[in-house]
Length: 259
Image 1 (tube, rainbow, N blue to C red):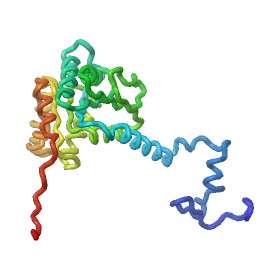
Image 2: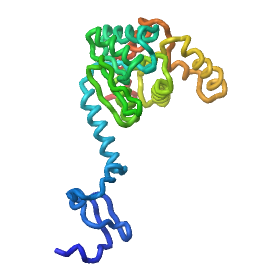
Image 3: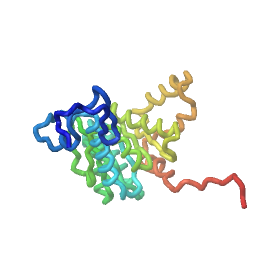
Image 4: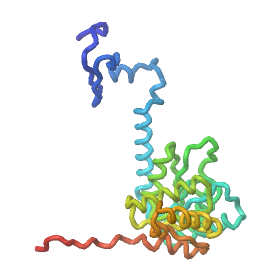
């Protein structure tokens, strides 16, 4: 075997990666792995982040794969107990369980906690999908199954993949982000049969008026896009609207050759 002092090869293969000329790295992959005194900055590199992202998908899929039909409920973390918004979220969580659904939230306080509380008190499955934030308060005590994520896009995938619809309570930027993410996925056909219900007409009316009077009026969206969501102030109606399309999709007729 040659010694480390020998001239560097013209080509270096590191798994699927090929390095040549000045891009050739000294040593081997095993050597760098086993070198305990090596530079620790590797844990902050993009290849290592890919592994973290992969692990988050694996953990999320594993934790939620056997979840029954579920509805995601979004809303402000700043909704305080004892307010009409909090009480409505509790009732929605309870009604969703009574209708046979698990409840998924962002796992935080406020409207999320209220929906989880309603689900737990009704004897259903209460799920919280948390996110790492500088001011994170942890999962609320009403969560039965909790998963914390580093990456927003992984968390968003779990919200959509394991829910059959969204109920959106009054909320801020995070709530709006989830709302328009869902509407975009439905509008572009990335997901099908995915009802979105906005709860609280007084809160959402300004947004709906802007969408109709500005976005649609200027041709940035079509009038039919406004049919992608429903607005209501009634808990029973919200649950009925968000759960009515959760049955199996109709069979696709075959228009080709028939034997």
